[in-house]
Image (cartoon, rainbow, N blue to C red; front, side, top):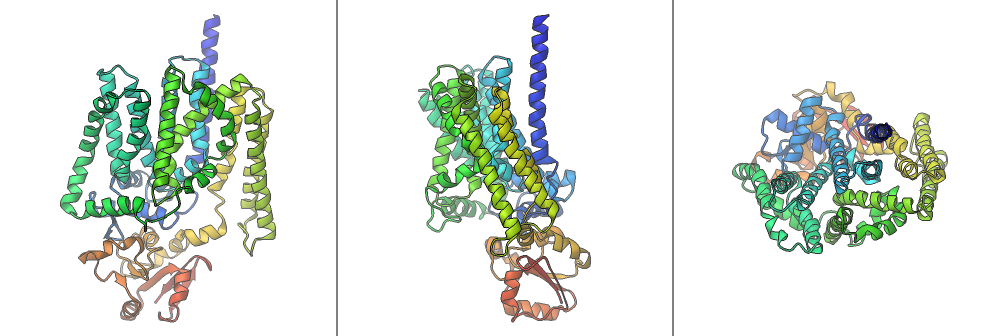
Amino acid sequence: MVNKMNIQKLMSAKTGYALLLLSFFLLSYILPLGARDLVAPDETRYAEIPREMIASGDWVVPHLNGMRYFEKPVLGYWVHAGSLLLFGENSFAVRLPSALAVMLSALLIYILVRRVSRRKDEDDCFTAILAALIFLSCFEVFGVGNTAVLDSLFSFLLTASITAFYFASEEQPGSAMEKGFLVLSGLSCGLAFLTKGFLAFAVPVLALVPYLVWQRRYSDLFRMSWLPILTAILVALPWSIAIHLKEPDFWQFFFWNEHIRRFMADNAQHKESFWSFFLTAPGMLIPWIFVVPAAVPGIKARLFEQGAQGRVLRFCICWLVLPFLFFSLSSGKLLTYILPCFPPFAVLMAFGLLYALKKNDQNRLFQGGTAVSAMFFGLILIVFLCVQFFGFNGFRPYSQPWKVMMVINGFLFSILLCFWSFRSRNVKDKALLFGIAPLLLFFVVHYTIPDQTIESKAPGVLLEQQKKEITDENIIISDENSAGAVCWYLKRSDVYLLGGTGEFDYGLGFKDADGRLLDMQSAVDLINQNRGKTVVIARVKNIIRWLDQLPKPVFQDQSGPSGYILWKY
């Protein structure tokens, strides 16, 4: 009878933890996903390329505005296209793959931690839940997971590849289970390659080779490598051959421009110093960065244990540190590059925090981190209120009072839960309350994008208002920053470009793109020859530069002084 009651209590606790985690994910990532317009140029790019694939039926060669776009392989576009076919051409469908990739990454983290211990008790389950929650509640994971880019999908596939290889390393050498996990690792690696290229091979190597060396499993470096490598090649080969046959220049451009130049050249895109990620990553790890000091002693205490928990911690150290250093050494840097480092961070933090809290449920370092987190949210709230009510160089985030109240409530909720975490004497409650502190803030962010950001980054409102008046017979001229959004909202792939080439530079070099890039005189001639059916859509700052050179329009509309403008002739 007692055993039956204990089992029921355990099942109830597990169900409660699972429901809490699911609720956090749904409220932060899924339910409000379509509440805001797509941001140009990044989100509109990853919406438009899949839309053009569907419209043209060409599933091999990516095109943007009808021109070749070779900055990424094809899998990310296929996934987004599948979402568009299932849910329609809308913001929710465009962002859904990123959110689902985050969910699957969190699930892999949960499975990894659960497999570490063969126990089936509540503590074992809670460690896995906490690791998944830590991952989901990191600011960068949330920000990227709610944005239509390829980084969350790429990070998930890397997580799957690295985790599957680790599972293989825990199985009996030569067993069917080991081989199965190695094939799964290679499959995920091949899919990651089809998402973002050769980094799919670099990151797993940087994580797994040092781990096997640390474990002194030198022979496994070769014995366990050939099967995942072969599988990855077989997965990547069909499309790799198909794109080569249709576009022989693809691999040369993609390898040199998107890998060598981006990561090593002096003129690399987004060039930053070696220390850039060291300075910016702490902000991306909020709120958990504040309790890292509390977790470190727990990690150190268990790092050299001989059992499965010690091995997984050593594995996660290699997975976190080596890829982070690799990305820091690259010339080009974006914060999204370090996203694959967040899963091992979450695992390390879960084990470290629970060890420390169980030793002392009022761990001073955790208590201090909780207090600092509350003060951080409070300070941001004070700064926000000062800027909102008194302005900063004429800037105020919101013109609608309801948005102001939503933001205030989001910060107050975070502060309140940090306070409850501080006061709680239950180890699990302390960790959970701290983890869900950003929940309301994450939810309201979807609805409270600052007015100026919407004006300058989201042309959807302007284009939706005017799309009924623009037919297929209209000739459209745009700048390179706006063109992807124009194509997406107006369902066109024949927009003329005026000004710079931007991300269309490579595609414009092909013969079938002749005449798509206009100089000012060509644009004036095109307008004069097509009076009554020419539309110009561009950033206001570009239109201001062109005012004295372009003819006067018969109609104009705009989204604001720092946004977009539409002229009709």
